Amino acid sequence: MKALSFALVTVFLLTDVSSASAQWTRVDEVPTTNIYTVSANADTIVAGADSLVYTSTNGGVTWKGSATVAAGVTSVQAVVLHNGRLYAGTFGQGVFVSDDLGDTWLGFNQGLVGGIFNTQLFIVGFAVHDDKLYAATSGAGAWARNISVAGSWSHFGNAFEPNAASNMNDIAVGGTRLLACAGFNGMVFFRDPSDSDWTVSWLNNVGLAPGLAALTAIWTGSRWLVGANTGVFHSPQGQSPWTFSDVGLGTLFNVAFALRSPRVFASFGTSAGSTIEFSIDGASWQVLEFLPFTFVFELATHDDTLYAARADGLWRRSIATVATKAATLGGVKALYRTPRK
Image (cartoon, rainbow, N blue to C red; front, side, top):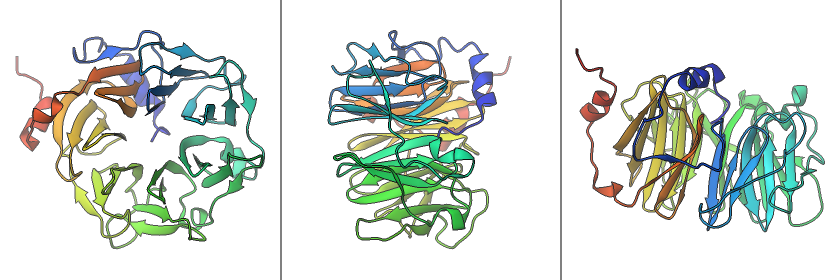
């Protein structure tokens, strides 16, 4: 979930956290700026910054910065590489494509029209399945486009607006099911290929829960995890019944997931910083480390390396031996405790 309070990010950047953790190293080829998104597919890793995309095709050994996606772009919120083509989702100017790893870009907004105040152009997330690109928007619900043939975007479902959920936070795919995180009333939406529209699923298994926001979702291969502003919800099918896991950190400003099977890594962001944790089942979480005054937008894994798209650049660390770590709720609270002088 990247549609966040940029004031909070600014506070983090004004704080000296250059030695937040000796475990992490910054990717030097990527500038020290907001990196909003990072994802990995085989040996290709892509990251989105203000107006550029950074790509590594050799597992992070070397990196290439793109040309400016388009004049006036200030935030590339979603990037995916599919069949050799880069797709960049911007916050305000829609989608752009490149067939040369970002040397040149073309607009890809055919049919992407009709949102109130042009909110259909405010892209916050992508998902790809069966040669279809799905886009989550901040204000105009979900959109879809077949990217195997010439065509255009179409509005993908009518369930968001009636449920006051046109402001989306994420869209994810697991198997053949799509899951959408949208609105701030305690709901997610799921959709299968045979469905004519999305179905609402209440995270509390009861109904309306004002203030409860699903921020991001991931399919682990055996269950769905939804990161919310209160903690983590998990379900085998991505629908009720949901089970809640309290990570013990209070209100969360952002949650990011990344899978290195069988482990799921998460960043839980609060006003104090980001706590990196991992889990096998999504029910119990173990603390890896705490990064004070550090905002993490997204996580990704490549082999035994964990990448973090942060407000101070793209960072990485080894996760080869983290499975032996353990923590208790008291240990989590201790991370925030100020030593007495």
